[in-house]
Length: 365
Image: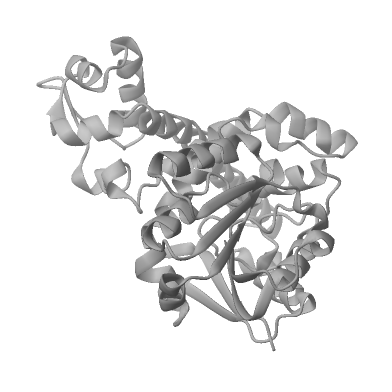
């Protein structure tokens, strides 16, 4: 075969392969929405509890409409998520799948993350407009984002807080028990602070966030729990480096919160300022590189760049911010932390959490 013919043949094969890739993408995108629905409706949990079940039994057990459940099961079966037994007209969620799709599987429940796809789809028109005209999409256009973030954090941070995360800081547990002042920047619904405040009554905890809705729920949960050593403040941190009280806190945390700030460098500067001498800052953020070519093998890079485009970057731009984005990366993170005043920075990764880095540093004397 001549070289030209071989080139044309190779090109055709490449096109066919890419067509298959695109079809897989469409199917996977559709399944992501259905997995999110399965999580939100409790259908995966019910499937796991029932072992094998008919559509009617599943719908009754989960309290859902039978017709919708039947169509949902069609997507789950053809997508390879649920097994169908045609002889008995029954459905089975294999144990190996339940281990990644049910609430009892946390922190390994991937169905929690599938919810982001539907949330992002709701703002597609607004994002397209931003592509054409610039600007950003504000937090108020993401009505469920804080709810899902709280669930996400509950799996990745809250579940491992005492066993994995706090032990990274050798002396923090006895300090919390003895009584210190703690600040959580971008606290959302305050689940981390609520847990810490409950376990450490001698310490005082403060949470800052821009979302009044999230903070309202945090305050309600604190009141229900009868916690008097915690407070939540509705605070825009855009000018934090100028408004932060100097030497106020012994321990500051920021869980997945810095990269979507309007002025992230200013926030880091403010954190350094508000820390007491020899105080500790713990920052959890996405485990990625600042350089695109280093993220080619990242297992969820397309998802993270999408989250950046359709949420983290754009909410910052909506505030007139720099739009740092989800994938700012470890190199830039360390550069900005050094610029804020921090010296030695320890970067930790946890075996059960491939998604995040945990940056640990102290304020120099």
